[in-house]
Length: 138
Image (cartoon, rainbow, N blue to C red; front, side, top):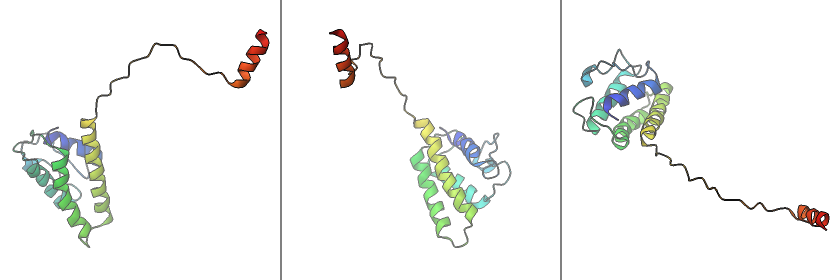
C-alpha cells in the first residue's frame, strides 16, 4: 500500500469531515481537500506518517509499524494534555482501529482449502441401537 492509498482508506474509515483527502493531490502540501475537524493534529499526523515511512512522493510505500510509530507521540501528547476534548480521544481510538483494519486487509493470508477426503466414514452406533439390531436379526 502506498501513502496516497492509505490516506484514501483513512478517509473511508474515519469520514470526510475528519479526513478530507484531495484525490488530485500531487504533494503533501495539498493532500487535504478542505480542512479536517482537528486540523493541527491531522496535518501533523500526515506529515509524521510521511516522514516515518521515509516517503519522497505520495506513491511511496508505507508500513503499519512505521505508521503506528508516527501516531504514538501525537497520541501521547493528546492524551496527556488537559485541553483534549472527548471527540479527539474518540478520533485517536478510531484512527488506531482504522490503521489496524486497513493494514490487516493487506496482510490477510490466502487461505488454501483443505483437500476433500473422499474416504468412507465409520459412524459409531449407540449401545441401544446395537442391541435393537442384534434382536431383529436373530
